Amino acid sequence: MNKEQRTKSKEQRAKNKEQRTRNKEQRTKSSFFSVLFSLFFFLCSLFFPLAANAQEGFPDVSVPGTTRIMTPPQPPVIPFIDFTVRNPQGGQEVAFSLQLLLLLTVLSLAPSFIILMTSFLRVSIVLDFIKRALSLQQVPPNQVLMGIALFLTVFIMWPTFSTIYTNSIQPLAAGELSVENAYREAEAPLRLFMYRQMSGSPENIRLFMSMRGLDRPQTLADVPTYVLIPSFILHELTVAFKIGILLFIPFIVIDMVVASILMSMGMIMLPPVMISMPFKLILFVLVDGWGLLTDQIVRSFA
View 1 (cartoon, rainbow, N blue to C red):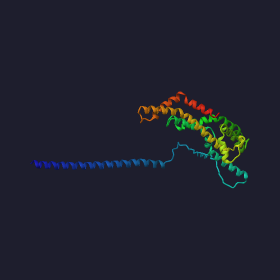
View 2: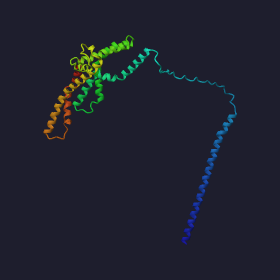
View 3: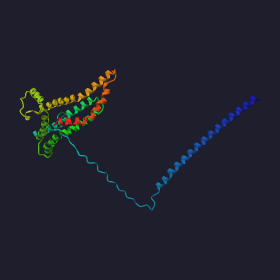
View 4: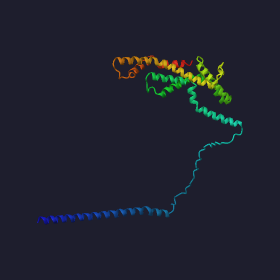
């Protein structure tokens, strides 16, 4: 009896489930059709009034309008640059082309001229020596040292640069001098500056004059520029290395004292540089090292 009741209850639940599935499908269909009809009526309400309004004319109260076409803006004016290559019409055009090529070459080599023909070479080497003598690796950076050397070069060379500007650049800009005369006027102050640095030790000039097979010069005018420049470079390197040796001496003494103390204490594995560097910095700051160094560098060019 119980088994029959359970069977009937199962059949009844299956029928109820089937009935709920049918009801759900009917509701889904009815909702779909309702949405479809709503969309249809919405589209009809959009298009039919527009068509009716299109068939009707403007109302009587409307006024005629005017339409003005704006003038389009003018395109920006860009200058036309034309570079033409043709055969020269005369010797003057050939000379001008060579002068222009020479000027571009000089501009590309201008940094080398600034480094090798001014005080920049000696100053930069001395600053690098003091950095190594203090056992400093990253401080101050090389860019800072090069900046200091550049401004010290401007300070030392300012009288020479002023003479070049007054006697060469300014008259050339005013049209009072030709390019050749302006070059000679600019060359003279630089030659005089380089010769003054070697007046006490002309061995380098004598060396290059003998290698070139030239006679012994009697005056500065007898020394060619192509001999004077390499002589000046070697002289600056020699003077800078001499200054570097003098800078290293007190700091080498500190390194030797610290290394001896560490050896006597049995601290062989401890690097002496790590201990000596603070003492070097203390000594350098106490004696106003940067001021003394700058003063001696500037005085060395007097």
